[in-house]
Image (tube, rainbow, N blue to C red; front, side):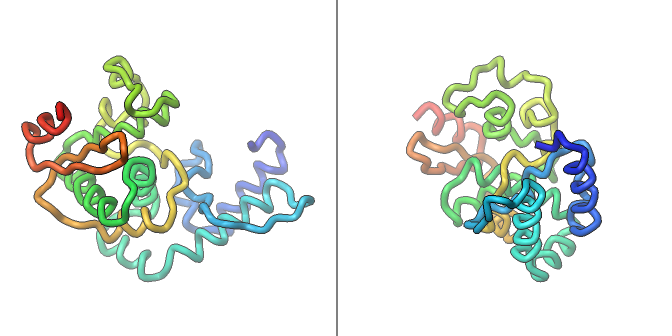
Amino acid sequence: GYSQNKDLSKLQEFVNTFEFLREKPENLSLEGYLFPDTYEFNREDGLAALIEKTLFNFNKKITQDLREQIEKQGKSLFEVLILASLLEKEVKTEQDKRLAAGILWKRLKAGWPLQVDATLGYITDKPSQHLTLDDLTIDSFYNTYKYHGLPIGPICNPGIESIKAAVYFQDSPYWFYLSTPEGKIIFSETLKEHNANKVK
């Protein structure tokens, strides 16, 4: 999108205006920060004006309470956004998002790979049921099967429900989850149980 120089200088202006953008690595796009919502735009609004509107909205939606909670947890807003983007792509209901968030933070803490199919979908543009074993080995920092930790950036622009779920996550005895083709999430405590659910 930023092919024109004036857009690039605008991007620098955004970083000066919105403090939250300073955590974002410079080489990454604004993906994750373009808050999904209903906006009114004028025909003559340029790209920069459209982006600015979504960033102002994002800044408003990330309340002081959310910011304080994130800081209390020793995380950055950028990390929370990345995790929220995984929830946005993988999980439908608010309750399931909070449980899945608890699992993913717990895996990170334990040094486990996240193994989130949606990150492979982001690289390959394939729905998770079309992913192959070869896809699991793709050399990309978005591949959460190959690389431990969070992917290097958000894989979509998460809504407020996913962001809140990432912050106000729920602890549980679960370590695994999978989703049925209908989008129902099945949680398991052990790999054995998880594999049995996969077979089902």
